Amino acid sequence: MRFPNGWVGGAALIVGPVLLLAGTLLRSPFNFFFPDQLRAVAEHPGLMQAAYTAFLAGNVVMWAAVAYLAHRIGARSPRWAAWGGVLVTIGLFERTFHAGVDQAAFSATRHLGVEGATELVARGYGDLHLFSFLSFTIMFGWFVLAIGTYHGGVLGRVRAVALATMGLLPLGVLKGTEVLSIVGTVGLCVALVPLGIQALREQSRPTRKNVLIALLVAVGLGALAVLSTMG
Image (cartoon, rainbow, N blue to C red; front, side):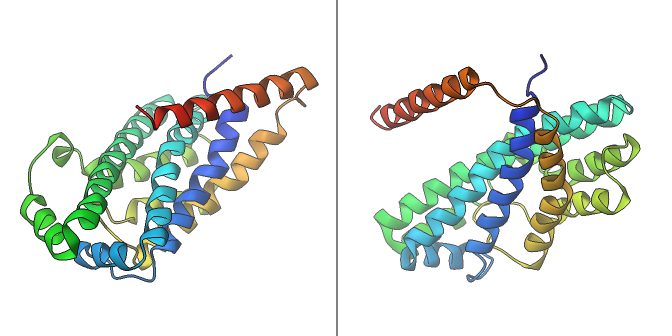
């Protein structure tokens, strides 16, 4: 059995893009650059936390979607699958790193106020780190993967182009939403959600035993998630 399997990969192809689009739309009422994002955090904490959390969750879920997609591409175009999969996955790691910085800035806003947090972020905004040298993967990887989906016969021309629009999504710490953000995440949904539905339909109907085991595992994981917040 390959990993991720059709159930995991198919679900990720649906859930990942939808979460990214939801996070993008939730923070769309506010200006793009970080001082305005921090001001929005102070004035609308629940909404901004939901927006950034949805985007982060979608970004994490996308690793399984990309792995599954690369596997399907690899049946006909292994080189495109390998390069596209690696580049996009590194880009996902980088966006997850950015999300950690975002969370620290949110905490600074609560404790230092908007002006203090803005000054703190501004002082360190240009500091170099590992992902400073890998930022190109966030955008370039999607173009490579999109070409791979077309050459590998996984997506047609229109949906491959839609997937490539994800490479237009702005990158960096505390970035809000602009037109290209919406274009990219909508394009991702157009490209991958139908493929996810198709992947799930290709799977065998789960047995009662499998459903019961899945429910028990979900409850167990939920309990572990709660315990994790106490450490």
